[in-house]
Image (cartoon, rainbow over all chains, first blue to last red; front, side, top):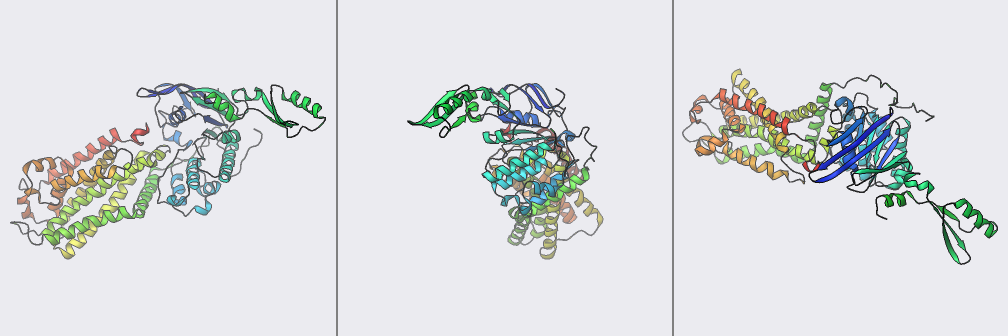
Length: 280
Length: 286
């Protein structure tokens, strides 16, 4: 695939006797938001850290932006952005100083003040990092991740601890990055985040990728039987149907018009996901 | 994709990526140095400890043991100035770097830097810059207080000052590298303090910083002779004490050449150790 930003085949990694990755195959295409989903210990972090060049792999082939992360140098790191989980560094330095400082490292950085603005920290630019709230601190991490104008951005659970409104604004920021051509690998626990942001999703479980699809089609979700619910004379009713259109038509004829409190639901992303990782 | 946003940033999509300027190493080193020094001055506890500890100890020792050191014309105030200068070098380089860097490994600072194009050289250079600034400041304070209140005679010729400078340079380089390497031994969970401070305390005692070196038992002298602090303290004595005091050294001489050799060997050894063992991540972090 000529357009793959990440191409992994048979990635394997063990820590002592514990197998972290059995065999991971993955393709991430240019300009998409690809989300890695999976329970804790499934191998998500190991997978991304191998792709970020933080860990070595025991076996398998890997190309990230055309290079092997295990051997790639500073020029390659200038083309990626990494937002790690929970950092507490440079507590005594102001937001503006930190962002301006990191801009020095990159060959082609974005304007630091624009980045501060983009993550909504303009009002906090004079605050020291230690004085920021959890969500603000996370946005500072994101600012540093996108500062180098990366072609590929790794986001590891970026919205943990955000309140709903801040999350929504953060999602919009990420979607903007995509529309300007950045490829994003997003690791998250939140299924609504996947549903809102991800173009494709890969489910990791037991050290391997068990399915790759769009959020709408994951696990054959779009073909799965729907549940039709309504309220009849005897109270709430439901019927599982593989052809909900026909079921609703029959109901409409039966009621001679409106069906009271009608809903049609397909299995949620959460339902299919839980089924896939064997917890439902 | 039908729309292309061309607003504020050049599209990362445009292949081939436009030729960007390569960030200059000098600029990165300067930025690191500024950041490190800022961080140091803003962490009030660390700064206070670095500047006041040697000074307080110096004033205490010089006041408590007033008078001449046995059988010499050298006063306690003169001798302890040299000991505290040597200790200051080791404290600001070895001790503070070992603590700082292990903390930065735990709080994710090192890992974050590793994920950027910043070359490791810039990081290490920034650390050495902060050590230089703090230890030279500390030395200045000690020399001023010593010559104002405790009869410390500052050398007048160029020779001793040249010696002072290379002693400082070698001492700082060697002890800094040793501190960076030592930081790797400290495991997570903030338990680093005692692991650095305690061994360092022992080394200070056996290196003649607090107790005149000639009064130590022979076997302790031999242990200390392997480490840099003993040589640093001896070197400082050769700079600031009258030539006659050399008779009190173990060999009866200043051993300037050997001092340079041992300190130089620690620079090389420390560098090799750093290159072999330095880690950007926590050990339990894979």
